[in-house]
Amino acid sequence: MANQQEYQRSRPDSKIAKIVVDRDLCISAASCIGVAPEAFELDAESKAILKNTADSVDDETLMMAAQSCPTKAILLFDNDGKQIYP
Image 1 (cartoon, rainbow, N blue to C red):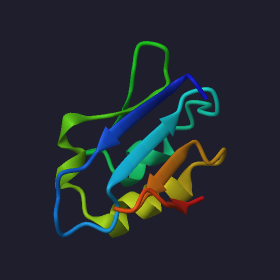
Image 2: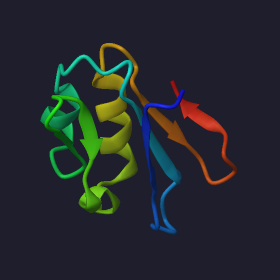
Image 3: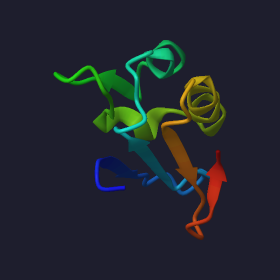
Image 4: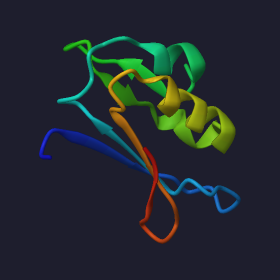
């Protein structure tokens, strides 16, 4: 999966340590933006990307944003590197 954007979070209180957007799976539904506009936006290719402000978003909201994606293009990982969603 070469066409990915990874974002390493720096929040020590977060169970979500890394967020990955698989740009090949993204279909520009923008549901992630509807749920967490502080974390996601669409780029010039109309693909979801993570904003630098993603650290300000709580775990519950990030999980809801990932779950809202119809193609499961948002992957969430814990501090041990284990995938927690999907």
